Image 1 (tube, one colour):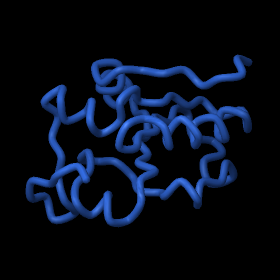
Image 2 (tube, rainbow, N blue to C red; image 1 turned 180 degrees about the horizontal axis):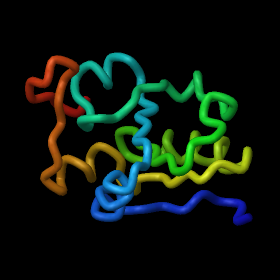
Image 3 (cartoon, rainbow, N blue to C red; image 1 turned 90 degrees about the vertical axis):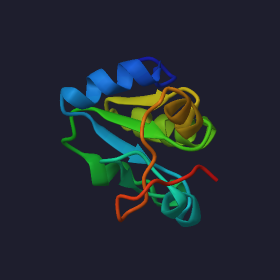
Length: 111
């Protein structure tokens, strides 16, 4: 097993999501509430526990820029899980034209 989790771009993530990957956003509550990717799950970085994802096939992690999600991906990867880090995070997601929404489905923003 490689020591670093692999990094993927937005196009790769979209394909992975079509194949059933989980999208996990590790930003803080205020960032999440301002806007997030549709269908993403929220779990702040400080609450990441590999046991919560046992049996999950593929997890893509994201944050604002990719730094915190890299930390989370490293922890989960070290526990033997199949994880990928979204290069550029929510910034790259938005720049690629992907939607950013609030919990109620209205347009969101990246803080």
